[in-house]
Image 1 (tube, rainbow, N blue to C red):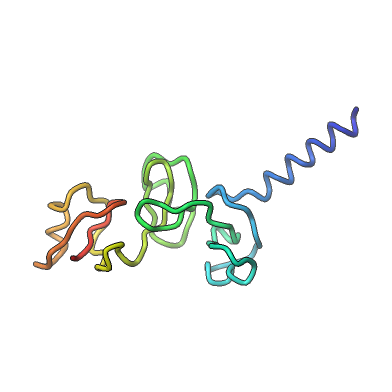
Image 2: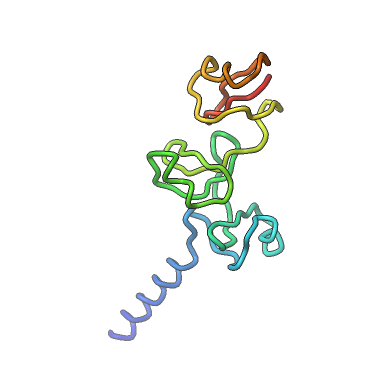
Length: 135
């Protein structure tokens, strides 16, 4: 009986240690950038706090999910060296490109009107995930 309980605890510890903050699986340790992680798997990976992790799902802004359980964007900064935002309880990286092919000029918008002051006269829109993008 003791052996079974010890085995069960060991299995739980092992599975907990292979889970990353974004819900993905640990692939390798010791990274400083996501580019280093591509050597270890064919799937999409990201470097999170020195660990190479698979990316289990994408975010509505086109970024990568780096953690789950946020309620404010400030909570997400510690999970990535990249800019992050909290979207529907997921910490997501902010893509450097807009889904429409435009340029990101600001973050955290809810309406296109909020983006106008950052656009220097260029037409802009607030797109999925709170990105102010040029059109």
